[in-house]
Length: 100
Length: 469
Ligand SMILES: Cc1cc2nc3c(=O)[nH]c(=O)nc-3n(C[C@H](O)[C@H](O)[C@H](O)COP(=O)(O)OP(=O)(O)OC[C@H]3O[C@@H](n4cnc5c(N)ncnc54)[C@H](O)[C@@H]3O)c2cc1C
Ligand code: FES
Image (cartoon, rainbow over all chains, first blue to last red; front, top):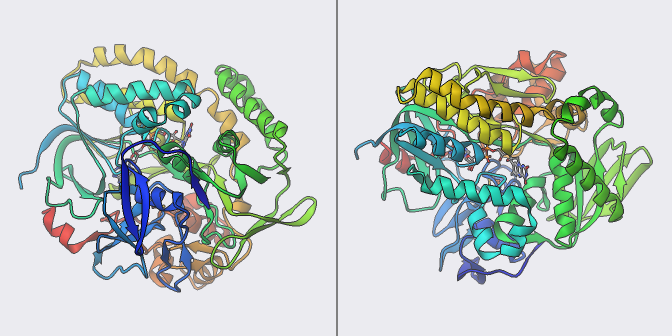
């Protein structure tokens, strides 16, 4: 689990699974959730195991969330914005993606 | 949409990319810098502008390197290079067309998604070497540097008890930073073999040319000792335990089996070059045995085997932020020469003082690389149920079986059991995969090769593909 040190900056509120979370601008969505005590981000694609942030630098894709209705968003690289609606990723869907 | 054209496109705005931008702009080149992170600074200086502005006392505590880096970020922002952040490069075509996607949803229609260059500099840095142990997919088990990124970029620190496990300078650095932030470290599981120092000693005289690194290291060790963090040696195995979250860490050391409560387990086995793009481009790579990773083959100016493509910074060889910055300057001078903006003699003249500093900064590397040689037992997990490919959930045993069935290359294994086929596209398992195949066949990973990296290197939706055309 994580906690926030005193935060300066412009206040922003986001919605996570129907809960209102307060944070500040300049933070990534992943950091904002962890700082609010949220650990569970998504279910794994094959067997639905609980998963959370692993690398915080864009390589592991463990932080995928549904943001403003779009699935598969890499939350460790997306900055929070006022009113963002965020949901846990049920199972990442590769079907509509072109991938190697 | 028209494709904007540049003399030089730099991928990555870490120390290497920022330095290259400043120097190439100084030679009058038209430059574009692309980075997938929302802010400049790279991994070591993530979100540094925000840190300096909004959390100045903490910024000051991070020391001189950070204030110097803040200067570099300012010079970079003022150098006249175009800079686009929050955009991931997912493809580079032979004609040096670079294609990107926005990371924030709903931005793709706002700006061009393809750019053309005469030269490309890849400065995408390094990533942590995956350290697969049983239970490492549980929430609460993280890469060690992730916690440092959270602290520096967002002022978020661990709550509860933390266990650190692994080896390497960054592990020590991050342990001391956590202590400074008032975090309780309940155990440090040191996986470095006990004879490592002895092995590294022959490289000590060279390392003494930059004594500041050694002094810094000794200071960190002292701090850990005096703060009473229990350090365990002779670690043979580590297991993360819990159901929905990590609760405990069980480990076997020279003193037997122990279990400690933990809210967070931070793993670290050093960092390795991010080769996704150089692999995609078909650059020649070589196996660096001491640190057990692949690196692109470079000449003394950072040129790869592919015309028009150069490399600077940790994605060439992991050497730290100072060396990365210097190599960025060198690559930029060479680019200016190749494009006719600088004569060969002027290039050499300007490079010579940078090279002298580079040599000095590299002097401690052989010592560090030997002191922290990655151990096979932490790369090829003994427990066959250990997950290797986190995305497709493939374990060590399945990979070994597939190799025994005749799949002797990473691509054959991938085709049969999907390891490396998930969202991360092999970033988190490719090295381990090669190591396991090599172990099974009793040959070197150098002879096994690496997973073939294909475009797109980041999953893109069909909509994004269409809008980039
Ligand atoms: C997570 C992490 C934390 C670290 N923290 C420290 C530390 O505290 N102290 C220390 O001494 N060393 C640290 N290191 C090592 C340090 O990162 C390097 O020595 C140094 O930052 C290398 O500089 P660079 O310019 O080569 O690359 P980096 O600083 O890594 O910069 C590379 C940049 O490229 C971008 N990029 C990567 N792929 C793409 C793509 N496909 N498209 C667009 N952009 C892309 C990244 O977002 C990044 O900003 C850390 C390493 C990691 C991985
Ligand atoms: S946490 Fe690894 S990609 Fe976001």
